Length: 194
Image (cartoon, rainbow, N blue to C red):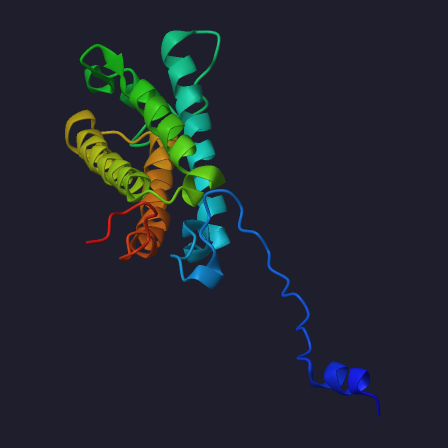
């Protein structure tokens, strides 16, 4: 054997290059031990159901706002007995500080749509998760107030309003079950380490 072939056999073999996938912008590299991206800690059904519920609530709120401001849009609901949408939506309690309650719903669900977009769920800031949860809690608080007014003051129930109440409750459940995973320690990028 020649000395040249002996030295070539003793040389260490180069390992094949490792294939790595580059994390998308704003996402930590799992190989560096960074925090888990927020969206991966939330089930896909939570993201999509929160968005669909928010869109449904917005649609009903738009309808009720149109009914309030125009006579061209009829109120499709019973106007007799305990289920009486006209009595509820035209009562003095259907307006707070000169603003129809339906407009409050419209603003609430527009904000919830923004906070429930997949891009918002991917946001690593805990502030977004806290704002989403806080808004859902405020929404259910307002719903409890409205239900008590319907039952104790107006003495009638509006089915359209009830659909918004149910949507808000379901939204609270979905957001409430997703938020703890987003608030876990280390769940926010950019936190300062001591």
